[in-house]
Length: 94
Length: 366
Image (cartoon, rainbow over all chains, first blue to last red; front, side):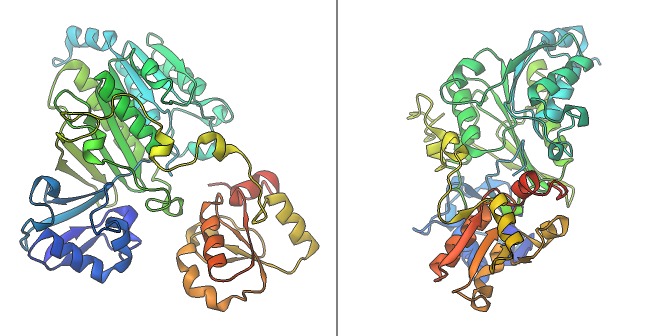
């Protein structure tokens, strides 16, 4: 089971959890397991073509999966996946 | 300090920094950069100080409420260090003026609060080859890094496109811990001073993530994308574009225009309707913690996220007025109800903030 860190803006779609564990041999499989458990999360991180949205990055430990093997990147039980969406707050805090 | 010395202090004195925004991030950054003795600091802001800013925008005080933020910031910074030359840019940064404003500064600090301006600042920094000291915040989390540093990534390498409006994050869960922009703003100030002095390891190619609730700092690797449209090997963005359109947002002028349609009601009309005792239901679609702060008498709380499962309890033939904090969430609620066959549903424009402004000033704003 890999650990997945859920960022604040997406926690409302994952029963307010900040950390979730999910099984899978690759990044893609872990994310599918995650979105099966939390279907509302799927629309947030994937577009209609089933690709990760361009304002959502996924990191395996501290590496961006775009520069590894993307969805096919192997995952082991000791790995941490982070979902990192863009946030824009600065002045008004909204 | 031996790492700075007279030579370092002169570097600071000879440096120029532009702060885009004097809000949550810009306020602490401005205080410390003035105190550090930066020679010239430019400020870009066109907003006015409001009481609700004071929880985090520590450069402004109660005596400044109603004043332009830029004036209030300049007053405080001059008090801290009268030898800093301060430039006023009391404008909204736009594709038309950004290159002209940014070109006169060595370093740019992005403390804005919206995606269009962030992409604008990024592209302008890439075009002008100026380092962009970036920070952004959301509730209890912050991000910081330096973009457009020679050889390093830019904002578009990290996020090629912004989220479409209405996806995440929405105003429903907006707001920030007031101290958070202090932490992130001071990371930006630290990185700016390090760049000027040429000391240490700049926060380039690394995205710092800060989580206040767990008090954790993490770091992720960032890379320059050779295919990046802005800073890649074959850039396609060679001039500034229309960033409102790029982010799928209405233009500021259009947004500001009060549009009253048959599906809307304003605060004053709502008050009259309540006073007449009309038969309708007023539904507040904010979150419970917001309802605790203030409410309009007679309203029923059904948070937007829970509305779909409560629709069957509501009579589709009855009349409804929906409201939230500013009118965004309630507009979505109106759409949802109309799609579900409700005929007589209106959105209260401006939300409870407008109610506080126009009807009952004792209703606290947040």
